[in-house]
Image (cartoon, rainbow, N blue to C red; front, top):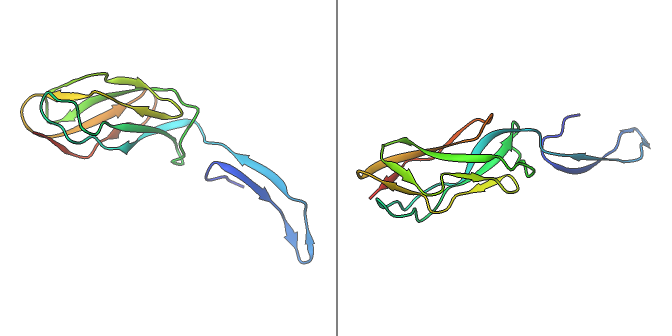
Length: 131
């Protein structure tokens, strides 16, 4: 038996008119394996904090939120150049890293951010414009 999503289930077996007693099984998230964007950054004006700051989830290989993770997640500019300022590294709380005060200064145009944490697959944001 393989649990796919965290939670509790009662497992029974039956054959014809005979059924077993239920066994309660609790599935927990696996080891942290990847980052996923919960909220994409947007509303970026050069030198001004993003209107919508990125929020990153720490997930296991099955895509389940790892609520026990407190990993340090770092945001950086992946494409488009400029300078990213603000608190660029935050520790996850309950498996979620919430950034605040990130700002990009530089020429106007399209950008993407990448978020990384030691030992985990990175996440890259959708393209957004610095105006």
